[in-house]
Amino acid sequence: MHSKKKEEPFSSIEMKNSNFKNKKICGVILAAGHGTRMEPLSTYIPKPLLPVLGKPLINIIIKKLLRAGSSSIHVNIHHLAELFSRNIVDPEWPVTYHTEAQILDTGGGIGNMANTLKICELILIHNGDIISNIDFTAAIDFHLRHKALATMILAGAEEMDQEFAPGQPEGNPVKSARTMPPPTVDISVKMEILNIGTKKPDDPAAFKRAGYTGMAILSREALKFFPVDRKIGFIEILLEMIRSKTGSVAGYIADDTIDRILWSDIGSPETYLDLHRRILTKQAFFDSEAAPPGIPLHVGPDTVIASGTSWKGFLEVGGRAEIEHDCELENCVVLPDTTVQKGTRLKNCILFPKGQINVKGL
Image (tube, rainbow, N blue to C red; front, side, top):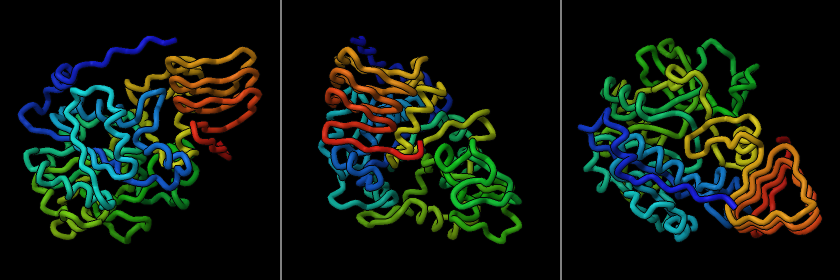
């Protein structure tokens, strides 16, 4: 049985960041989607609540936003909304939920919070299904220096004379579609966003293309572009900003400040299982809240593993799970409260209380 780590008080987290203490910063986590690519697992638990090394991903994101100086955090929710408040670790965290009767998409979700967010000078946006080692601090400094309405945080930057295979840079397995966001954003030499899409434009001003990490920064003035009670995507709104004024949307390339970008989404069973492979077998350090344990095995508290069980590759077992006698598990994630029946033999699999997902091509 593992002892539970004492959570750090919000006040001490907030005090760690003094770079922007004269700015009121709010965090926004976009968490309202159905997660259809993750079915049937997402019918049981929303993607932002999926555990990474035993911690709900949303808790990891909240701590990241608090470290960046956020004084309040706002989360839009819809699918299985009642589960969110049960999974927040610390009741003192300044988290407010905004429930959507109908999904408003990423841009509409921000618009639905706009009246609340107007008290903030800077708004940090974070998708609820991604994890990375990219810190907001340098990006905030970049955003303020460029006086942009919005700054997209990008990774996987490539020179524009490169030819790209669909979805990923050709000949570069490190920056694949799985471990880097696909390169769809075109940037000028002035670090202005010129285009967001899958096709490379015939624009001589574009000198780099990079992928959108699911993290962004908004100035308060940008909120006027976000409609209330209207379904619209975040990218659509950014394109509208670009059309309204050249240079209003900047592109911060994290590759320029971090030697090795670590990024993953958990939008599919493949990427969720692969994230655990990278942490447990490659010791990939995405976040201090998901630090690698040093061996390719992590077992949560109050978990029972019976005799005769063996494992290969990597194994993540959530809290209060039970693995019965004589099981053989290879490259598996067992979610909390799951029972693995006697004699089970599985490879590349996600197990949860109501079923399992077999993953191909890990």
